[in-house]
Image 1 (cartoon, rainbow, N blue to C red):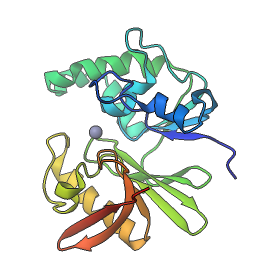
Image 2 (tube, rainbow, N blue to C red; image 1 turned 90 degrees about the horizontal axis):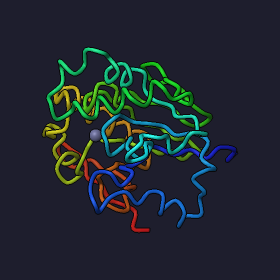
Image 3 (cartoon, rainbow, N blue to C red; image 1 turned 30 degrees about the horizontal axis):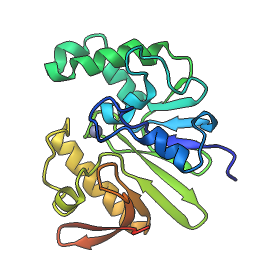
Length: 221
Ligand SMILES: [Zn+2]
């Protein structure tokens, strides 16, 4: 047990907004040497999840020695040579940056669609909708389960309480809604701990049914 240090997503790398980008500092504060990370799992390719993999001006890999595991479905979407003609202009820079980096990196591995084991105790859960290959992760340790929901629900008070509401960043709102209901029902069925990226801090806690949606109570530390 505990043979590998696994990081899920890489944050903004301090390249999106001045009040984000503290992951490296926080890793250090938690006593984790960034060089000791063996594997990085990527949920999807929005900037706040992948820019931390790339140096600000040079795009140099920040984690050249870690294996970076990505959903093949997400990778295929963003690296499709014709993608620029299909994406709104606001996403062109992101697609270009992805195309200039990931295909050249030797430490990227892709995992195929569907629910599948990635590492001992770690499974990929398809959670398509927010982006084409958006993936949640299921972490299992004995009787305890954790579901890292990625961006399947952005703000719990809005999108868990009202799973049929749509977030502007959801690429395919209908698929995102179906995913949201399915994924968070699974959290309840498994009595899992759930973590979401934009849930506020601490971003992990438990769910309860609340009307047609869910109520999230975060652990208080
Ligand atoms: Zn996102």
